[in-house]
Length: 258
Image 1 (cartoon, one colour):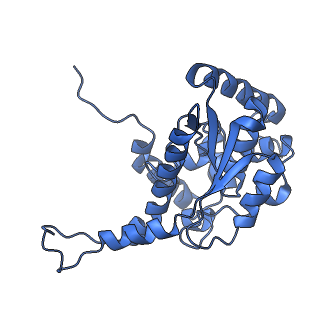
Image 2 (tube, helix red, strand yellow):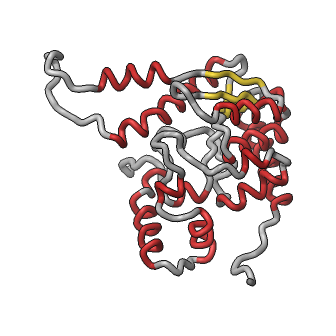
C-alpha cells in the first residue's frame, strides 16, 4: 500500500534534534545539565538518549519517580544503566498521600469555607505535577543548574494527553514535533532496547494503557495527524473534540494586550 505521506528519515531527524539540543543548550545553559524524568517508556528513553548524543552522558541526569511501588521501575533502571547516565530515585508516594490527605474535606477543619471533590481526575493528575515539581527542584539544586526536558510527543500533544503543568511542562521539548511512530523510528536509530520502545504505553496512573484511555490507537491518530484521513467517523469526531478541548495546554498563557 502506497504511503500517503513522505517516508520518515529517522537518521536525518535524529541528527537534526541532536544539533537543535546542542544549539539550545549553548544559548540557554552552556554548563547546565539535562534533567529527564525517566518512566521506562519510549518517550523518556528516546529523549534521554538524544540528550546523551547531544551533550554527552556526563551532562544528563535521569530522575526516576515511582508513586509508591512501580511495577515497571526495572525498565527505568535498565534505561539509565544502558545510557550510563547518573540517576536518582525520588519516590513521590508519601508526598502524594499527604497532599490527598490535606485536600480532603473535613468538617473538623473550621476554616473550610467552600467545598470541592477529590475526584478521580484530580488523583490521576496530581502525580505528574508532583513529578514536575521534583524535576525542577533537582534542576535548581544541581551545581551549574539544570534544564528540564519535556518528553511529550506530537501525538499526545495533539489530543491533550498530558497533564498541564505536569508532564506537559519543561524547558525544551525535543520530541514535540514528532508523532509516536516517528519517535519509535528515532529510538530504533538510537539503538535503544526493543522492550523499552515497544512496551504498551501507559500513564501509570489508572491501570490502563494510553490507547485504552483514548479509545483509539496511536497508529490511527498518527495517520490522521499527517493525512487528515480517518475512516471511522466516530473516532475522527473524538480526535477533533479532544484536539479542540485541549488547545489551551499548548497555547501561551493569555494576557491583556497593551
